[in-house]
Image 1 (tube, rainbow, N blue to C red):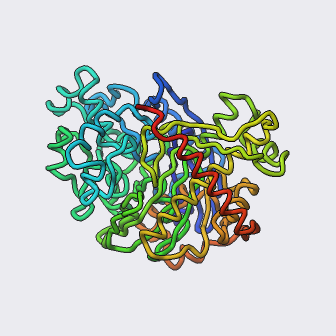
Image 2 (image 1 turned 135 degrees about the vertical axis):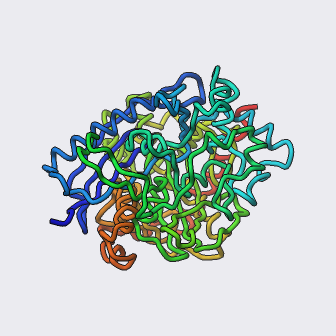
Image 3 (image 1 turned 180 degrees about the horizontal axis):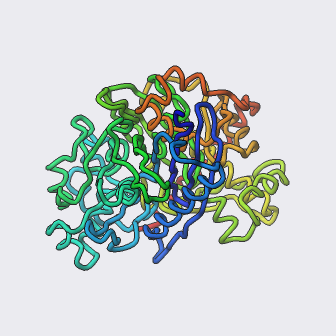
Length: 500
């Protein structure tokens, strides 16, 4: 019998999931969280061994839930939290240190040093990226310079590096393949967008040995990245044929295959992507240029992206650090306990501000509080911060592309929050549309793997899978919207320059 499913491994900032998809929908899933490690203010780490353990656990759990038998799974697709960086020993498989997470800001001095010659946009023409603590290149440089013995191990060929996709594929294939795809490589600040290869000049400037980096491949490829060994957590040899960074995977999962189509994913952070076609578009308004996806030997597609560091993680902070809610889903009811934000604005610049500001000197503030302010106002301001940050990015995107947004496709965990979705429509002034399958990140990884082996025949068959679940039309008066955005800009200004 032909295989019935594609397995998608979605390794995110706070948890790891495995979801099985048939030809039209998800049929089983499993999810496990992992620790967030904060050694110092501004530092964020993950334990790579824990992530690999959680990956094995969710694979086994989903196979049990779906009663998977040999031959049921056709291929595996992987999606991951992009810039988070791991260095490990190629012989033992042991990490040299914890992974440095994309939110981490310890590389500010490295970025400032590199910006002194040529400015923050020094490498933008080649990489599409501004100099920022967000990206992997400075993280690799910091590890090599600050962790004892790693540079020597890198130069001797013992140490290798990768983003989380590389770490998982290396482990899933028993150490046989050290690879990444073009979407993840485009987030390192070490790959040339034109050649889709590591750039020797950038490696020299960052002082990173080329031999420690993974081989760059397409995002969807029938040759794939090897197979899981027969004795692996899947229990049999299954080809790994799809690999995409999480936000590019969501773009594919939302079937935004045509230039001009866009989506926003509401997760730990928020990420708006606009497909710009087979030519990279350089941003002049604070966005980044990134690879959207690449199928086999076809030309790569590119995207403009606006990355927002703190959105869903702000709700977690309200839960874990302030104790305002017991579980994340409680935030909507608390925010609905008040009719508006009471004049309160929350700028969650815990790791500085990403797009379109790129200010690592910013820090989080809550502005406009009075004795009237209560926990409901704080919760509402936190949700509104997500929508207002998204609006800032989309305004920049419209300026860069010259295309006015007509609607926004949304997905991710926070897309179930109907108060947030309505406010998003209100401040954008356009329709916000949520699909029936909101797990679009995992879906995109499944699509990449399935397309490679003809589990799905073509892009049109994927477009037919996309179905609307709910839409929100803007209800806010234009004058109210303008005043809200004006107050938000005041709050943004107050957050800047906090770190000298």
